[in-house]
Amino acid sequence: MKVQKNGYLSTWQAAEQYLNQNPKPGQIRTQEGLTFQDILQTKQPGGEVKFSKHAAQRLTNRNIELTSGQIERLQEGTARAQEKGIKESLVLVDQLAFIVNIPNNTVVTAMDRQDAAENIFTNIDGAVII
Image (cartoon, rainbow, N blue to C red; front, side, top):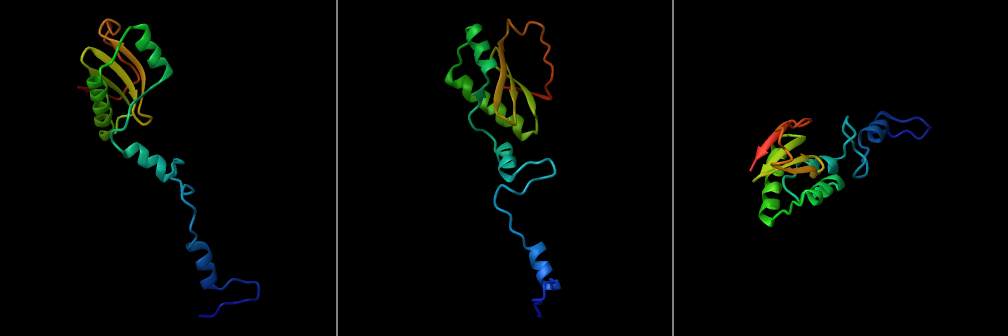
């Protein structure tokens, strides 16, 4: 194989330069701009559910205290929603309703049966009853 040294790239040199580029981890992105780490985090079921500031205030204002069993079931419901590809889910645990942003694993709002009197939930694409 002949490698040219006159300032021009040989076919072999061009192929090596353009086809064997090894980007550093985290540099490769999908068409949507996601890295491997982003995709991995959204595909892994489970994990600890976080509460947004708004959801934490709702729980405090409504005197709702979650038991460890309820939190475990909320996490289970979130994992099930994630497995089904749901993005914004209503998760019902006992007499409590939670709207959960599944990709971020974050509870956005929480309410009990009295506060959900209208029984209308908007901006969700799935529901899980635990």
